[in-house]
Length: 162
Image (tube, rainbow, N blue to C red; front, side, top):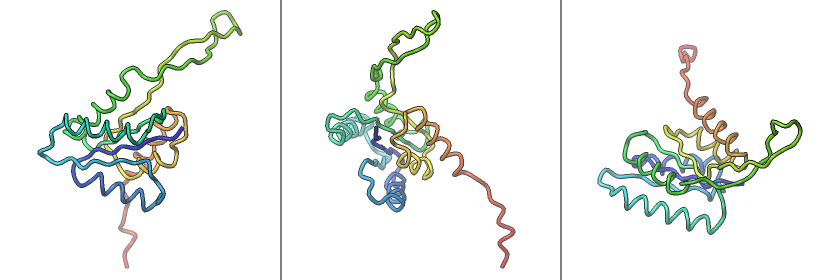
């Protein structure tokens, strides 16, 4: 299953992040970006994002990965409302689970996230989102967070003396 990537950040970060992703993956066409200005009306922007997501999906069950920069700020609040609207109850699926009666399996309904919110977006998170988009959702979330963490490092540059 592929993923639609939605980036909602303070202007102009979302557009800049898209340019970096396109530099590495030039054929990516599953990314929507929104640079949020200080005077934005959150409800209007949320409605615009929802309409764009629905238009981009064209009735597929593609999962939606929504990224924002600063949790608690307006762009993240808009992004979280979008995720909530896209995923109010999850997508019902069934799976087999071991029964307490031994090897008899019973079918248990569960809910699978159709959309996921990620705060603190960085380039490495987005690159992993594109690269691993077909993984199961739990593995995909782990890869995205792993990429984000690995991309943040301090480096001793004293050895670079000329």
